Length: 96
Image (cartoon, rainbow, N blue to C red):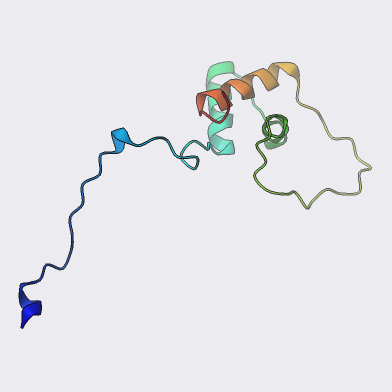
């Protein structure tokens, strides 16, 4: 009979303004970075270029097992696009 008066849930109030930005929230997707660069710089960047810049800053998501045989030439990000991607990473608070 005591179960009849119990509440089925507990209400909790959390003020998110006081919480710091978690590491997961500060990560931007490749698509978000591409959109930011296109909107602010008018340039299209590839996932490869974004990965090269992220690697430069030590942001390694996971190990790449699809390395190939090493016979083909891998295009390198240009200085202009590298600067734009770095700005996007700063915007999304992934680097300082």
